[in-house]
Length: 100
Length: 410
Image (cartoon, rainbow over the protein chains, first blue to last red):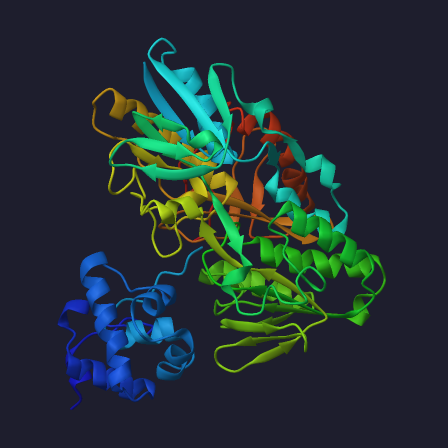
């Protein structure tokens, strides 16, 4: 049984309750999404969690690249496709709110 | 004498100057409006200028024409805002203005320099923006001489002012080249960092279908990494490359530099603002209207118009020492021009995405929602007159500010 069986996800695969998140869940979500987490990925994840705890939402790509040592190019290699969404997903946060 | 200081005489600042002049006691308050420019542009017109549908001179008027008597207009750039000291320093003569209440209406500007290579050799040669008067006029000259090739419309990153404008540009380009009889020689590509034509599911589907119908190719999830002017290629972080003969860019949008310099902004120099009261999150005598705020509503004139109704009530309450009771609901109404003298109407809020149905309006309505119609297009064209004569002057307008579900299909 996977650690993911014990927690709930929304229709898009984001953790329903960000508070139940832990490192083991992050690894399991990453595996499900087909990405391998490295030390560099964790810089992003730790920053995303910290931002969520102070601001209540996932950071933007711009905030991640401005406030960590990971630049946009690397961010795309760590979280291929849509790094904003994928990083939020692995960090156990809600889907980033697209600006209308 | 107390001072109410307004920074920025665009749509929001001008509208609020008119409202405040009517509601604040002139014996007690001096209202000062500061802007670095003398001209007021009708910004929805920037979309029509490139195609020659509007003459450039028809969308410009002197700012002072809309400044009511009793409001002092100062033409100057702003050097620094010091909200802890309740004062603002102007560039013109380093003049210092102290205030009791401050309204920030400094808007948003494009920043092509944020994208690598954007302002290289191709800038304003075959790379243009249409979010500035200068850009839209130059793009018009280019389009006049354009006889075929590949046009890439690119949104660099969100949020942007008037998020439907890039789509409208693509729709109108299709129409324009059909009118000129060379549509078969022109390829139009719409590249966006979003996963579809728009952010919200119902509208994204409807607008995406229109792109397909008009034979406009969509390149979704395209996060621009740079432009190579020598090769005419725009590339994305995930390794995609798009060739272009004409690149129409919607560059990164950011709030005014002075917001960042004054330590009042977020990563994009937008001011953290309470999305309901429109008061600064940090300073109780600082208010924010329109594009300058970080609220999750559209950066659009209709939003400013609806916000103004909330803002005037809250400002008057704050001045009277009362609790703030008015709450902005994120209401936005947008006309999306789709070419062939038709347009679509969308109406939404913080909580409700754009839906289909009808938009009730006394006498002239109802207008269909998310559906192309000539009737909607008349609404869009008449808006220029309404903007200059009613909206900017803060005259009550027969559109209820609060979002309503009436007529909408769920």
